[in-house]
Figure 1 (cartoon, rainbow, N blue to C red):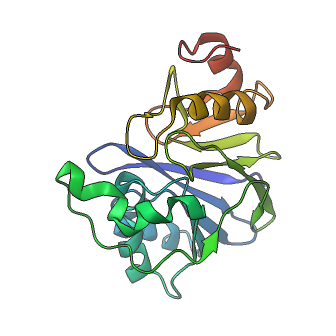
Figure 2: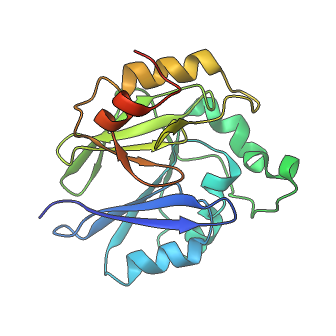
Length: 213
């Protein structure tokens, strides 16, 4: 059975949270639970799956805002993975206060430090961590080759790219991350972004106006 991918649009910024599951093994992870942690946890539990981890592409508030509620509603609480270069952002609740938005404190530092090239597993599904700085210093994407899927966070969107004007952002690094870590993937690879509709690598290489080459 192929991997099960359930997108859930959550919160005031319409963030895409994703449940990635191996139904045969009954295991799932949540990627970027930006809000509505109770709803996300319920979606996993209703299917009888065990939540084995929370994977974060980066630590902006609209991608971590639902973590605390998931930890409250899932037993045992799953470990949390984040690139160490985004831990400063985690400690200030993803910068929520600067936008006048309140989120629950996500708690202690994440349990797992993601690094470029790490191989992650959920059941029989394997995903590769790709360090993709530019939107934030510790931004990562998760590439699942067998499923031909990239969970891109706020790196690239359909016809657009992530912001680089927030603290820790770097425009040149963002463009290089897209060229080296997205555009080198097969054209048929589906991109599941942090906001907006899914797209493909080939579609963005042909039509994204922000990235050349």
